[in-house]
Amino acid sequence: MRRHANYVPHGVIPAVLLPFDDELAIDETSFRCHLRDVASVEGISAITVNAHSTEVGSCSVDEQRRVLDIAQDEIGDKLPLINGVWADGSLEAARIARMATQGGAAALLVFPPAPFALGQSPQMALAHFKRIAEASDLPLIVFQYPLATGQGYPQDTLLKLCEEVPTIRAIKDWIGNVPHHEWHVRTLQALPRPVNVLTTHSAWLLSSLVLGCNGLLSGSGSVIADLQARLFRAVRANDLAEARRLNDRIAPIARVFYADPFVDMHNRMKEALVLLGRLPRAVVRPPLVKLGRAEIARIRQALVEAGLLDAGARDAA
Image (cartoon, rainbow, N blue to C red; front, side):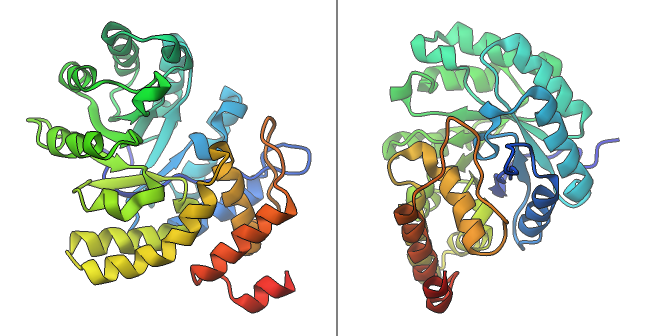
């Protein structure tokens, strides 16, 4: 029997990081501590593994299976686990979906295949999701990329996916366009079978949430899950003053995490956790590289401005 049967993705869902040791192997001890730390935050509804934040593109399928097993062992009885499905081919995506289902995941976050950037058709997108849905009956979360990447799903395609694949229950919305994002919120959440919009617009989170998203799914939650949960509650309660206050604390973190180059966002989050004493080291797998001292200093300053690190600790570091 599934631990979290009938789960529908909603609310505040941090995507955790994956610590590595100096030999680039998974640091299981640190990962377990990180999972317990994030899972202890009041107000989160699930946790995501095997996604961008865990450097899934640099992990083998066996490592992804181990990541899910560790997460199940540490926190699976407390929170639903969402497992990413990262694969360029639909057959491999289906294999990962089966693995995650057997491993006790509560839902699947489906990344668009990289070849879609070369030109997808609605039929290709449907075939990909139907293949995954045939392999698993878990709720699916569509990762909606910006359309300019070639990997995002146009409105008609997205509606067709929601209509023809009944296990699609949410989207992770990274469309990067405010009117289009609002269309997602207004349209998908009002379908006869509602599809929740989980924003991942972490660089403008307050603006996104006030549009009415039913949740958020973000790697920033690996560092600031508490601030995100409190912001989500304040918006839901129509407490604009509290929401603005919390957003002012989140703003310096968002600026430093999502600076150019954008691909270093989770690299920066690891450095932040080291500065906060929550990880022993900030090792990333190639092609990511270690951040320089000047950028780490900017991360430290952002943590101070957010009230997460005191100036004395900054100066001592």
